[in-house]
Length: 248
Image (cartoon, rainbow, N blue to C red; front, side, top):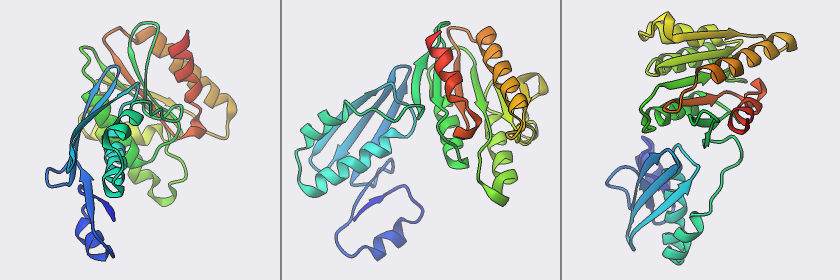
């Protein structure tokens, strides 16, 4: 079994594994230890394996790609495949569009595009990645609705808003924008660093107006040393804004 060393459920998973166990993760006790360094052009992942060290540079990708590569290399080690050939193959890995991809705007700001989907865990991971980007300017978080959360929606939006207070500017967009903003306020973010773009998803006019306001605000605001994260569920339609900002 190949198991995540960083999981709090590792003891239970290990106990239920029918055969031998190989672990991967950031924890130094893992069999395959990974360390990801995010830069403005991608992520460099260093791996320490039972068959020696390795390194992969993933251009244009940010986020927890180190754990993805760790799981892949753990599989390689478990199956006895060629380690170096596998590392070389990972160099050409490309994620699906709008999934933690690093792009540039015409103003030469860094755009972290994760507009394909969103839940609380991926929102928190994206905010952590935004914080790790080595920029000298502002870190701007554009966060929209996380859809299909049911009864957990208010709690999760509030929790994400609290985490977003670490950004220099939070732009909350969508029908849950007020909940995101309230979480940020309670975590200490002043109103002058908050931009609220409320919209109802079943009201096409209000959603279009909110998206247009967002795009115009970012065009007017972004500076070369800034980094901006765009993240929401796909239903909010932020992907075309990421495309427009990086192509115009």
